[in-house]
Length: 263
Image 1 (cartoon, rainbow, N blue to C red):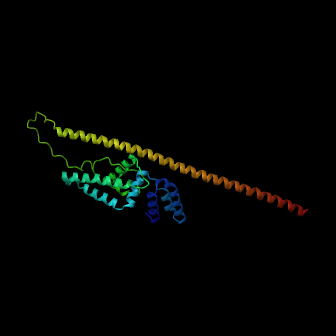
Image 2 (cartoon, rainbow, N blue to C red):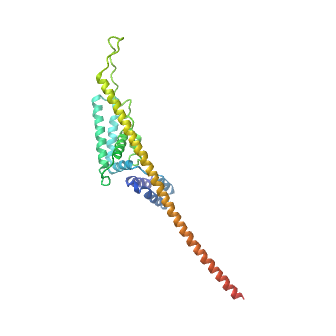
Image 3 (cartoon, rainbow, N blue to C red):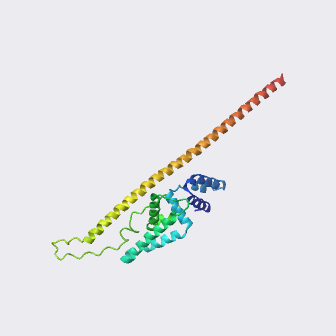
């Protein structure tokens, strides 16, 4: 990424999304004036972030330690298969605490006095996804929309050690009695899965609505710009017509004067 493009991206993804479209046009125009048409095209192609993505972008740009802390915890969690149950529980707790802490930090801004619950959920989901997904981590600072991770660790199949196989029953013809603790654990697991699915559905619905609103705003900005350009073109056309009429009048007067002189 060129310095000019990087500087434009830094400004756009840190500034309020309401200012994004106009500022993007200004920065693209500046790049063209600087003799960088290719960079201008890239700047014009930068996509407007949703408000939740902007909150995360601003957090990581304001505090470079955020990405380092997320990466450090992700590295530890990747060793999940080689860790014992105690260490995994410690890392899971650390993950929850870090995401909660960073969410609070991201939302403690003067221009976000009362962030809605949906915004908080999307910021939390994005930070959690950044721990689990290197692609999301790489896009921190230039996120366009919130990210979501569907698993419960870095890899749903390897984040937790497999349970030891149960010993065979003493009487093969009789099935082993159900373990009440396992039944309770299974119910809790299914309940948590349903909660996560419901939370993801709410976040995705909110994201879809926000994306639609942003698209509508972009189109409104485009319509206003085109209407302004049309009004300007009409004014210039009217001026050109007046000038043409005056020029024709002067020509007729000059022709008349020339005719009189030739008589």
